[in-house]
Length: 224
Ligand SMILES: O=P(O)(O)OC[C@H]1O[C@](O)(CO)[C@@H](O)[C@@H]1O
Image 1 (spheres, rainbow, N blue to C red):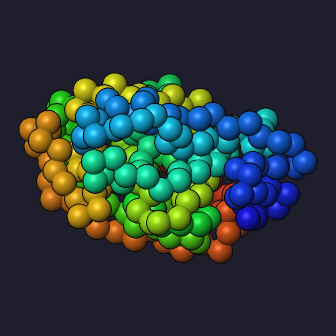
Image 2: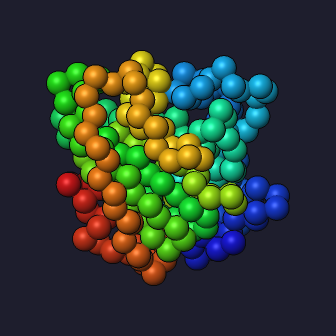
Image 3: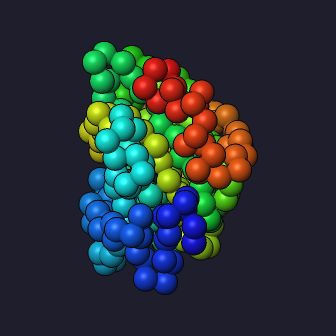
């Protein structure tokens, strides 16, 4: 599968070749997600939760980092496959956004903006995106990516390379304010306040390459 010019994802071998270089993935295991699962007690055995191929060559040396994340379909206690979830720590006092582009599969992005405490959510957005659509995670929003389809979800993300993830709020509340299950959304009871979700669809964009060449969009990653 073509990710961009000179970047190929070899689906059967779970390998990425970028400008001829083999990119070694960082693997997140199911056991590492126990702290954010709706029903961790339903996890019977460890396995691969998702793979992150970080800092692909075309953008090395630039302020923006390009990663590819591959989430196979899985389900623990009815909850669909997802990333751990994090907020972005401010960089030099600024909260910075992030862009996801879906190459294949069906994604649901759960975005949340917290209020006075981590148990209070002011805004909760559910964004659906299949291949050819992108999502901008706005500054200040925490995010979880869910594989809502039956196939592998393959997506890229563009982010300022100085941004560090903050996992603690998601670990304390055991995930986002809503879980995505095979029966739909389930409210996480650990949050004291969470509005009804707002539903959106990620806008279409011709390709990741075109997105990477769109100055207007890219500039927002460093200066929202
Ligand atoms: O850090 P988490 O919550 O496991 O999520 C992984 C995702 O976050 C990123 O590290 C960037 O925010 C991606 O590479 C990856 O898709």
